[in-house]
Amino acid sequence: MMNRIFPLIAAASAFFMCSQAEVERPDNTDQEPDAEIPRYEAMTTTGTLVRTSCADPCLIYQDGMFYLTMTGSSNLVIVSDSDLGSLTTTAHPTTKATYIYHGSDDPTVKTVFGNGATLSGTWSPELHYISEEDLPGYSGWYLFFGIRKSGDDSSQIRTVILKSRSGRITGPYVNPVTDEYGSTQVLLDKDGNMIEDWLVGMSILRIPSGKYKGFYGTFVDEVGRGEGYGNFYQRIRIAKLDKPWQLGTDLHTVTTPTQDWEKKGSSSVLPMVVEGATAIYGDEGEIFMAYCGSGYWSDYGLGQLTLKRENDDYCDPLQQSSWIKYENNPIFSSARSENLRGAGHAFFLKDDAGNRFMCYHAYPYENGVKASGRNAYIEPYTIDYSIIPDSAPQGLIRFGANRNTVTAPVGTPVTFFKKKETL
Image (cartoon, rainbow, N blue to C red):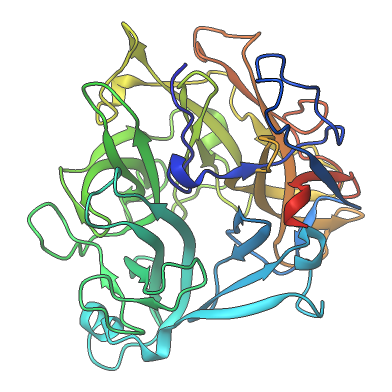
């Protein structure tokens, strides 16, 4: 069996996803008689809500603690707690908030956007652990996110990177090149030049073995801004990385909007959307990519791509032909949900028992009317190996306890398993 790998941290400090399952697991008959059998404690929340007023959530579980970061104004914060249900609001007494980025203190803002520039927001922060095996000499926790210039349209956004100086997920975070606190490192191309084009939503993909073994970054860029309806669209892009902040190859296209569901919400000034590419790893080495389609202001949802394998090896992830797009996308949506809309921007994790979960954002609705801004929600997912159509030949990603393609009701209980000794 090929090693399991996950998009957040290296296998040596593996991640944990969640599911709705019973507390005790059956004994493993392959274990030695005196081997210690893991025991788990069930942590059940009253619903799928993780946190109010939370867009682009990045939820990590490590060593009995939950860590959540999200899109902010000009600042970024990590909130943490040992109880998943306690992350819901800032008012809970056990939840800790740690500021990890202050845009007003970042000299890179002026380097990128010019003297006098300020930020109107940060976009899509993601925390990833990079191991020595991934990129020798660059191990540690990294934060990837976009910064947006005040007073301009969304064309003025750039990708920047920070690294935890302490080695802890909560930082403090510094420029990974200069070790300067508060200063970000801008993303560089393969020649070491600052990437000045619109390229955001950075995430990580690992190829564990074979000819194309390596560490890759995924991004979203755009084509045709200002060229009118049908000509303005986004692309999911990929490149091999030489460093956490520098590309090792040219950028290559993974997919563009080709299916009807990816084009909802577009107009002469709003693009056809594919974005938020996130790697998912299967039980036998399968590599999937979950991505968002359509405008987040419309029927946002998740689609699935599968990386081809031939002769037990992975195909070249830099080639668009290596990625198979599931023909019945979206695999997850809130278009028919009674109380959520615009569900997407998925981030994936596991619990201590190995159950898979996804954290995403959506707009809550009451009686058909938007009740607030976006909140973060969580629900289990599985990989279905019993249904393998030609457009999903290595399995199909399913969500919720009933393997639905739509969001679970907000009040659905969620059970997360933790090792008893961590409680």
